[in-house]
Structure formats: C-alpha cells, structure tokens
Image 1 (cartoon, rainbow, N blue to C red):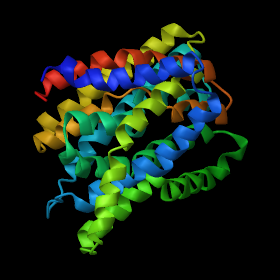
Image 2 (cartoon, rainbow, N blue to C red):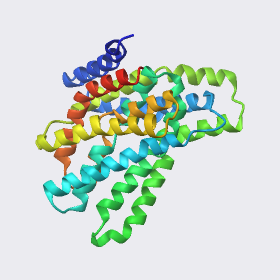
Image 3 (cartoon, rainbow, N blue to C red):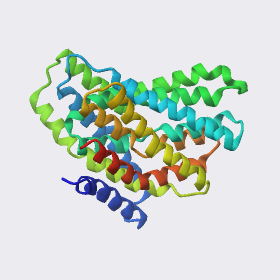
Image 4 (spheres, rainbow, N blue to C red):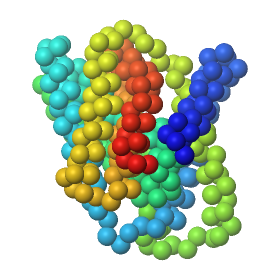
Length: 310
C-alpha cells in the first residue's frame, strides 16, 4: 500500500464531512451532537476495548515518554523564545504561541491515523503518551501564562483544575480503565467484549467526520507569517526531534517510535484555541495555525510515514 492509498480514506472522510457542513447539509447543532457522541462514547469505548485486550509487554519502555516529551518541551521553549523576540513581553502570549508550536492533535486526529497506519499494536504506546498529554502540556502552559500576573498565586489551583479535568476526561479515563482491566486480569463477559468491539468500529470514521465538519468553525483570520512559523515548528521540527530522540538517542522499539512520531505530526490541537480564549490573546493566530496545519499536515504525515517505512 502506498502512502497516498493509506491516507486517502482518512482525508476523503474528513473532506466529505467538511463539505456536508459547509453546504449546510448538516447543521451546527448536528455537528456538535456528532462530536459529543463520538468523543464521549465511540472513542472512549474503542480505547477501553483496545487497551483492555492489548498484548501489554511485561516491561514497558518508559524511554518512549522521554523520546516524545523532551522534544515537546524543547519546541515549546523555542516557540516562546521566537514569540518573545517578535512580540516582546507578555506571558500569556508566549504561553499560547509555545503551545501552538508543540501541541499536536493526538486524540481527534492522532488516534484514527495511528490505528489506520500502524495498526492495533499502537494502542499501548498511544496509551502511555495520551494519558498524560493534556496534563503535562496544559499544566506547563498554565504556569507560563500565569507567571508575573497578580493572580499568579493561583497557579496551583489552575494546575489542579487541569489534573481533575484529565482524570474526568472520557478519553484518558477509558485508557486508564482499560489498562487496569488488562493488567489486573479482570474477566470481562465475552458477549460484552463483542458488543464493545462492534461499537469500536464506528469510532474512527465518526472521529474523522466530526473533525472535518468541525473545521468549518475555524478560519484563516490573519497573522499568517507567524502562523506559518508555528506550522513549520509543529509539522517539521517537532516530528524531526521526536524521530531523532526515539530512533537515535533512546533506540526504542520501531513500532512504538512510529506511533510517537506520527502523533507528533498531527496538526495544532484545537485545545490551543481554547487556551487562547481563556487568556484573551492570540485567538486569530491560534485559529489560523489550526487551519494551516490541518491542510499542511498531509505532507508532514506522508514524509514521516515514508521515512519510518510504515
């Protein structure tokens, strides 16, 4: 299978949903309903089923997390440095810009693409990465954004709020629950497993349709030069560093490295836009970066898919 053949169904499903929403064949309320059922129901069930039935190695290679998150924080800091030279001071702006450079969309787009390209063997490394993804990056961004503000003393409260949000999140929660069932050896009624597997089959196409339809909310709203900087950092530099650390430095299992690199290739996460709204800065920049990276990520994913021999 060529890279084009592998990516075509993913792009085609998302594009079809985008066109349907664009032409108003489906309303905004219907799109939000699809998103709600997909990310609160279909995806969590798929992740629970996948991790509960996955063949988890007796010894996990924790170097995967170093190989993935060291590049994330290096790119985050470099992005903040670039923003400081371009915009000047402003902790919230630096935090949003850095997050845009280093925050991949690992759930809405990363999960279906990794499972499509790598296969079900990607469940374990995805579990290790995704369960702490928001907690680490959002906590770091919150600390940066709150520094030197009068309410900076509330940093701990913000981080605790993020932690609680991660714990209650259906995606991270389903991963943890599935891993516990797997590791403890909890018996699951076989017809129930078959039901979960049947539901799981709807998760990937539903997620791609929700992504495509939801993209109609975002527009290119200016600040294109800096949005292109974010795009280059996010789609070229970050995956390159993840590839270097996972393959060359830590020499982790190839399939795990493939999963980590593909996750890092994803477009800017929509949560960056939410973060920008929270701090009332860079909203247009975040929206533009999301749109550009969604369009350009096809080339990034294709390049690294070829490089990794997937």
